Length: 85
Image (cartoon, rainbow, N blue to C red; front, side):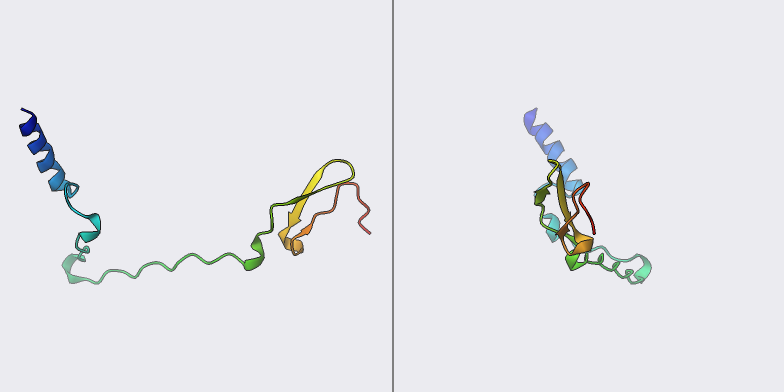
């Protein structure tokens, strides 16, 4: 009985292409009616080089913390209540 169940399972999986086959070895899909396949979409654009800063923080005099700002060349943001002259 187990042999029959195993054979049925193997047969069902082979129909799906899951039993004993390498998915990378499958042939490439063919276009319908001899039409060429459409071109692949372009890759997404790369982010700007200055888009990320180090994840360190600075402790302010009042005990709060501020992080780096990528819009200011990764300089620390001003502390709350600091004189910004």
